[in-house]
Image 1 (cartoon, one colour):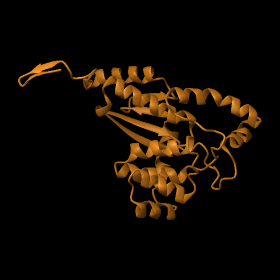
Image 2 (tube, one colour):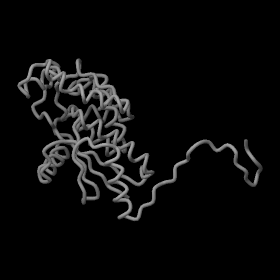
Image 3 (tube, one colour):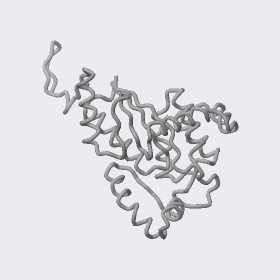
Image 4 (cartoon, one colour):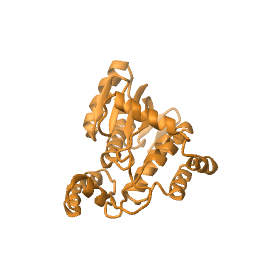
Amino acid sequence: MIKIEAWTDYVCQFCYIAKRELEHALEATGLKDQVKITYKAYELVPDGATSPTTTMLEGLSKRFGQPVSKVREMVEGTIQRAKSLDLDYRYDNMMWQSTLNAHRVGKYAQEMGKGMEYQERIFYAVFTENKFLPDNEQLLALAKDVGLDEKAVRGILEDDNAYLAEVENDKSEARRLRVTGVPYFVINNKYTISGAQSQDTFENALEQIAEEEGLKPKLQQLGSTDGVCGPDGCFI
């Protein structure tokens, strides 16, 4: 089994892209069933807004000291790359926001075996639906979408300390590893991949590690199963 630990944040434009590139690589290599991915919390904007007063473009404008129009040009390349992966990034109504509560609920999602589904739902909610994660009712609805228990999630959101230690542990581990940006992947506690690398890069890394670990890819069926003869006869 290949173990991948992935540090991400839900407002990171490259984290969603890297997630999709990795997923495509897992499918292409036939190693999907032999890889376990654990998502780790990382806050790009620890002081992110808890009320929807600033758009993402406005927040980036303030951070980079550039006019909003310039920031819009800066993210255009990312929008196009996302589109090539069938991801729809809608920056105009995306909000500058805190992701702390979403990470806390994410820890619960992983405990319930829903970590992968939760990650996908939250990324889509932020980048395509432009949801505001600090809004407890919106986050609760997203958690319910992936089958998480409403009462349990509401309890987490009403208790500021629930799963906070787990989130802080992820952040502390990132500092220990000297992670300065996300996405950041640690594979089998031996290799690291930083940034939204291409599918080919992920494929090469997975194949190298699989060879070292003696893992065999799952054979993939190509084409249909027509035109086959067997003990029960031939099928056209």
